[in-house]
Amino acid sequence: MTKPIEFKRVGEGNLRAQVYQQIRLTIQRGELAPGRKLVDVDIAAQLGISRMPVRDALMQLVHEGYLVGTTRGFTLPTLTATDVANIFEVRRLLEPRAAAHAARTLDAAGLETLTAALQEAEAAAAAGDADHFFQANSAFRNCWLGAVENDRLSQTIARFADHVLVVRLKTLSHQPTQAVIVAGMRAIHEAFVKRDAVAAYDRMTHFIQNAEERFMRLSPPLQHSNDEGENIPLQERS
Amino acid sequence: MTKPIEFKRVGEGNLRAQVYQQIRLTIQRGELAPGRKLVDVDIAAQLGISRMPVRDALMQLVHEGYLVGTTRGFTLPTLTATDVANIFEVRRLLEPRAAAHAARTLDAAGLETLTAALQEAEAAAAAGDADHFFQANSAFRNCWLGAVENDRLSQTIARFADHVLVVRLKTLSHQPTQAVIVAGMRAIHEAFVKRDAVAAYDRMTHFIQNAEERFMRLSPPLQHSNDEGENIPLQERS
DNA sequence: GACATTCAAACAGTATACATTATAGGCTTA
DNA sequence: TAAGCCTATAATGTATACTGTTTGAATGTC
Image 1: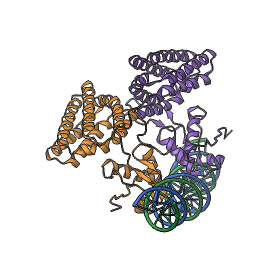
Image 2: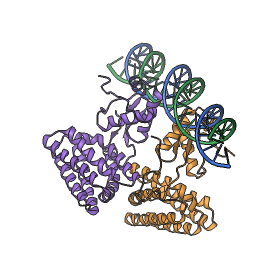
Image 3: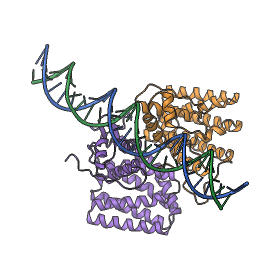
Image 4: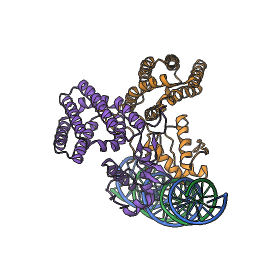
């Protein structure tokens, strides 16, 4: 039970990049238990390579905020309510604009992919399949985000969205929340189909606000860090 | 002539962190020639340490966009006009909001620092001292940015601002631009002193727009990457 | 004289060994 | 029994050696 996580090498680029991709995907799929400790030497042994590429990958993930590195192993960060609020503030600033861009630049193929993802999400929500719903949601997001021509914008958004993903997983099993998300996706999708940048902007704004409210309401265990807006954003797991 | 760059260790944390800080400061101060090649083993030898901490620091800087890693040493990225436009788009989205926050949270000490930085900038502009002007400018920015309570917001801003810093250095010797920047700083400073978040927002918006226009106008050598908004800005080694 | 081919140097990638540090758990003592 | 120290251990941090690849130059051929 100490090693339920299976890493396998994916053949692309150097070892560090392969390991990085692998670990990041594991995190993004929510397959990493919150208290789970990632140790470079263990992963290295499992992959049959040395510590250094694994260590490099882990440190990169730390720099990007996916993990926190302690003197006692790498783990997932535990977000406080303040953290989540901070991340959502940045997302509120960036995503509507990005959606407006996507409304201009999405091509027919992209719209098709988007439509398919929306339908999958609807089906998964109807069936109560949280896993499937999550995947469709990610596909939807990745699709329109990929159409944004400003790479720095889209990459920044992707990173921040991933950071609250840990929290998101908890809320995905919540039926009413699924319904709200699907409704938001439909609205955004409609704006994209119409190539209406203004509508995309407005609906994405609304979507993010909704998402934040839901997150906050469904996550009572998260504690505000401090009344004074304290700056201890990522605390170690106690 | 192959080694005009002098790195020295600063005693804080582990070696990687020290080297990272050192190199980043060197970049931020504009002391790194655009075509300059940074080689881990050279820096390591100069510091009297091994390659690995230096290598770690360099790779972190690559991940953060400060450097690009090629198969033949690390160098400063060369930004296209599209890159600069992309970075400024993100800054336009984030900085006004951050300034509004700072207007609320800046304390007396912060305002004093800010006032001092503004006066230094004015003096430097009057004297035509580009170096000094640049330092005052950075101090001003770092001060109000430090008052922003949303760390993720302020750190993202700092990073993107640093990325165009290479370009900024070119424009700082331009007298009319200095005047425009000082005027913008004065306006923002006034809003901060009055604790007027709305004014801070508006004036920062104006300031960024102005800055972007100036950059674009003064940088004809930068080439647009491609008509289609191509995405080869900073090629990272993956 | 121009182009191709090979060879050497330089530098990043990887591996392994050693040093350091912080935490946990036990042991001692009050 | 509780509290504090102390040691063992598990993990990261650092150093060094080796390997592979790319680039650039030099030499040879057409």
